[in-house]
Length: 195
Length: 206
Image 1 (cartoon, each protein chain N blue to C red):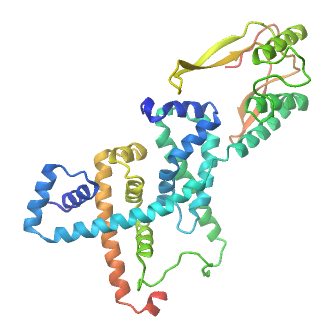
Image 2 (image 1 turned 30 degrees about the vertical axis):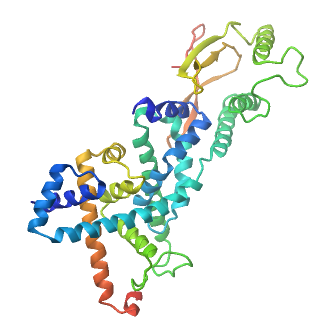
Image 3 (image 1 turned 60 degrees about the vertical axis):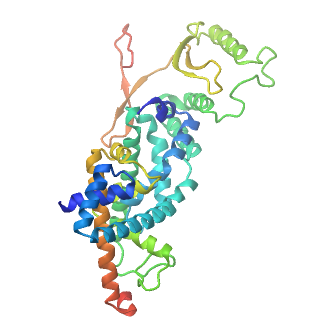
């Protein structure tokens, strides 16, 4: 990371400078949201998890020993928060009845018939979060301000060529998944899809 | 050409990363297998829709701010609890106030003089001199010459000169009945551990 990349801000944040902490958060929170999106359980609210990430960030920034590794460190904070939410959900579900009703406003299966463009995009993102773990994150990060392969590699610790391959393969898997979903929904009546 | 190569070619075209060689390879492939155009269009559409949905989803991050004040209050509480166990509540309150002052939690803690303290304290330097006078007289301040340790020198954002950040180090002394160092209990949490320096020996932490 060079000086223009904001390393002086990272140093200031480590020293406890509140403005630096806020600036860093403002600069990085969108791609952090994409990381959380890639790792969070489906039924956990993204905004709630981001609040957890923000708190973990402000608590732990002083412990950062390698300022040049700030971004990968921040990514780890976000991934850990998402995984902790996953473990909590698993623990909670172990104590819940096996069958539960959908709450109002909660995402649930709906037939594909007559979806708006926005709904289709939403459905596609849900499918993307079902891709294998190693493919989800690069694919979603690529969508955040067109993040470069190199930057995604820096964040995830993957070689640039691996990032490129995973994005390419992830896109193909997503295309196949969407096609399969469409074929399945066409072969069923709306009532069957709802079952 | 393998499947992965085909995927990567399509991906590079979508991402605007295709080199002239990639384009040649793509055209050669398309001349043999025109279905690649359909794949390209479909993947491009998926990518655009996915990015639109991801953009909508991550926009929620803009409303999430770092809870810095809550964190400061939390740390202050932790410090008061820890110091309270170490050296009694009087010391806890003192350290708490010092810490809170440095963190900007106490109104009027930064800059300028404060009403009622005295006419000579109307600047940071005046306040510092007053503190050194009173501290030396009480025996708390050991050395009246503060050491300035430079932390950072950066160009002034307004383009004129440089901003120097430094720490002011003023040696103080205090008499306590018992000293502690920070250890870890069986749960990995910080816990005070009594230290008993040998008589006439000096113990320096770290």
